[in-house]
Amino acid sequence: MKSERSVGIDCLRAISIIWVLLYHFVPMQAFNRGTFGVLLFFIISGYCIAFSVETSQTAWHFYAKRLGRLLPALIVCGFLTTLFKILAPELVEPGRGLKWVHYVYTLIALPTLNVLQVNYNLPDGAYWSLQIEFQFYVFCFLMMALGLKHRLLALLCAVTIFRTLTT
Image (cartoon, rainbow, N blue to C red; front, top):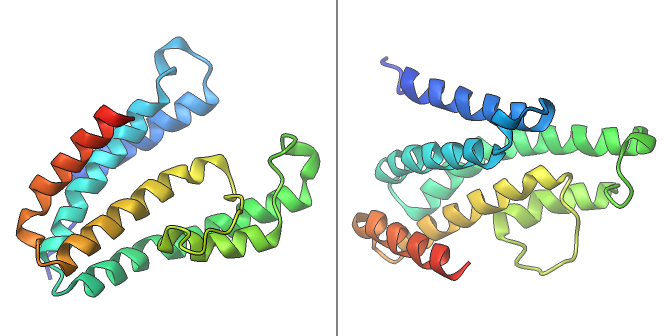
């Protein structure tokens, strides 16, 4: 069976991850734009998600596949972040502490875009990108559910331009 992975895409992923890590941990002027790494990662995600949309039979199938890719990492990383913040509160900046209830609710709130409107804290500030990712998934899901799968790229471009101009 032929692998669906692309070495080029994986190399771009590595570059984007390394860029963000350098931004956070190497205080050099050359790496002061950590958002470049995040933007590259989002571009790669959009490219890969387009294939997921194409190979999905239904909107539910698409969303289930996306959850299957993100939730395991969210569960493990959120658990470890919460555990660290609880076991070593002296190493956590004031106001960035966390309770287990917030971690558990994150597992519900992110995939549902916090439909219950509960005030909660993400395990860490870096989890904002997952909020964006889930918004993208829900948008794709809705467009597929409305029968607009073949117009998804044009709709995504329009929404992206609109959000860029209004943000």
